[in-house]
Length: 179
Image 1 (cartoon, helix red, strand yellow):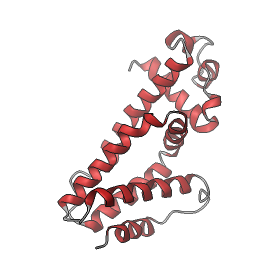
Image 2 (cartoon, helix red, strand yellow):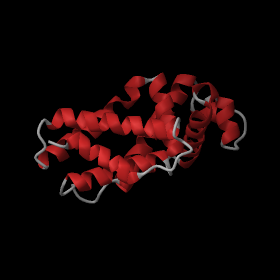
Image 3 (cartoon, helix red, strand yellow):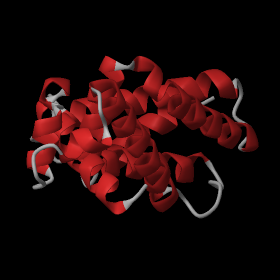
Image 4 (cartoon, helix red, strand yellow):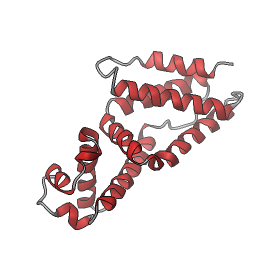
């Protein structure tokens, strides 16, 4: 993605995170990117094209985030997997909270936009659990993903003023994976 388009899409993601989908307009993106009025509409003629480009940028950022935040190797045991997942949830709720809010907002507007990423995450969890010998890995992977999504949502909403406890999150993951 060329620099100007990336600049526009990063501004658009910030708008979606802060104002929801109603805040995503061509003019608002221009203002958020501090570019002349009409710049966004020159690149993205319609709202649908703008939303599609925002989703593409989100997928690009998500891939980079998973590469940066992901472990360098597969987990050696459930303890390590639980710690890795707790770390990822905390990064998504902390350092990358704006991106997470944008993702959640976009997923409500276009649920299909997060389907592939969700199944990629659950598939990766299933592979890790299978490699660790966890019984019923597919169902357990879904349970852990659902728990992570719930914790993430709560950390961004009803528990946003609390200091999250990575040990408590990891312990909950271990309980979900206990025999």
